[in-house]
Image (cartoon, rainbow, N blue to C red; front, side, top):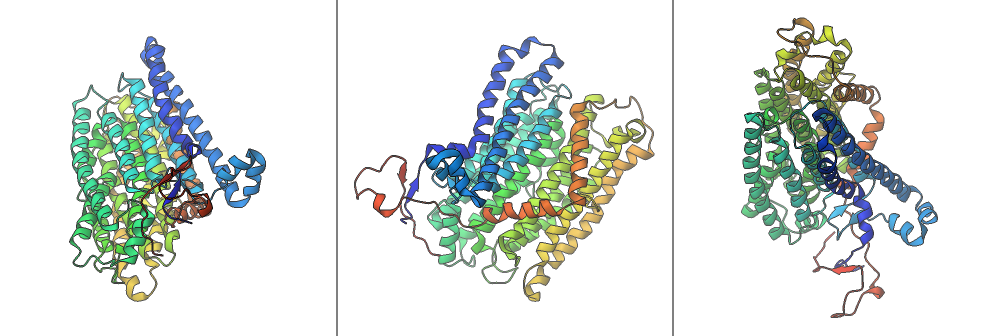
Length: 570
C-alpha cells in the first residue's frame, strides 16, 4: 500500500457533522435575532436566542450520538452497517483507519465521545447565558459560543500541525471577542484586550515552534513526526532546534491551559468576562487544549520525552514535571488570598492545570502505555462538570448582586438549602474529597504517575505525586471559605434571590453527576481509557490498491489526492 496516496472523499463531512451543524447554526441564530428576536422585550429576546441556540446544540448532539452508534458498530459488527446503509456507504462508515480529510482529522468513537462531552457542557453554558442580561448583541454572542465549540471539536480531533493551529486559533479568537461582550463594565473590555494580547504573542511563538518541528521531522502529521523522531536521533542533548521547538510549544500550550509562567491572563480574564464565557474558557477550552497537548507531546514528540531512559534526562518530561510542580503550588497559594469568587476559581483552574500536567508526564512513562492517558481524560471530565456548576454560582451572583465576591454568598445555606448543598458537593469534588468524582480523578492521575516500571525510575516522580497530595490539602482552605460564607455568616445588604432554572439546572445537574461518577467511577474510567488509546495510537489511512493507481504523470482519479512521499520507519 503506497504511503503517498490519501483518499479524499466528500463523505468525510459525515465525520464532522456536529461541527458543521454548529458552524451553520451560528449564522442561523444571527439571522433569527436580526429578523425576529430584536422586536421582543429584552428578557424574552434573550430566552428566545438561547432556545434557538439550544436547538442547534441539540441537533449537533444528536448527530454526535448517531456517529458514536455508527462507530461502535464499525468496531463490533461492520456487516450490519453494510446491511443498513448499503455497500458503498456502509463500507465507508465501517472503515477503521480513523482518519479523514487527507489525514488531518481523526474520526471514530473516541472523537464522538469528546464531541458529546463538549456539546453537553455547551448546552449548560448556553442555558446559563439566558439567566441575566450582560449584552445586547445576543445573536453574535451565541454564535461565538457555537463557533468556539467548532474550534474545540476540531482541536481535539486534529492529527496534523496545520489543522491543530487553525483549530486552536478558531477557538481562541472567538473567546477573545466573547470575553469583552459585557460592554457596560470596563473590566470586561480590559479582560478581552489582555486575553487578546497575551494570546497573540503565545500564538506567534507556538507557530514558530510548529515550524521548527516540521523542519526537523519533515512532516506535519503526528504519526509521521513520531516515527521520524524514533528513526533518527531522538535525543535533545545538543539539539538546539529541537529544544527550541519544545520550549515554544510549551509556551503555546502553557498559555491555553494557564500553566505557570504563562498564566498571567487567567485571573483578570475570568473576573472580567461574563460568567458563562469564563465557564467556557475554564472547561471546554481546557478540555480540548489538554487533549491536543496529549497528542502532540505523547504521540508526536514521545521519543523526546526521556531518550536517556532517565525520567529527568534531556527531554520534555523533566520540563513538564517542573512546570506541573510550580503550577499547582502557585495556583493554590495564590487562591488562598482571593476574596473574589471568580478570581478564586481562576487560580483554582491554574492549580488543576498542574495536576493535569502530572497526568501528561505519567502518560509518557507509565507501564500502561497509551491507556495511562485515560487518567487525564477522566480528570478533564469531572473537572469540567464541577467547574460549570461553580461558574453557574458566579452567574447567580452577577444577576442579583452585580458583583462576585465570596462574601456575597453569605447566608445562602439558609435561603436556598438545596442549591447550597449542591454547591458543597461541587467544592468538595474540586478539593478531591471522597466519594465525589474529583477524588477519583486525582487518584487515577497520581496512580499512573507511580506506575513507571523499575523502582529506580518510579521514585523520581514520587516527589511530584507527594507535592500534588500536599497541594490538594492546601486547596481545601480556600474552597471551604465558600462553605463558611454560605453556612456560618449572615447576609449583609440585599441577599441574592431565588435561582432561575437556567442557573439551578447546571448547579444541580453537575452536582448529581460528580456524585454519581464518584460512587460509580468504573464506567467512566473504562470509557476514558477507550478514548485515550486510539487518540495516542498510530493510525494510517487506507489507500487504494496499487493496481488502482494512475501511471506516473497521469491525472489522479477522482477522490484521490497525492502528497509527497514521507519516509517511514516502524
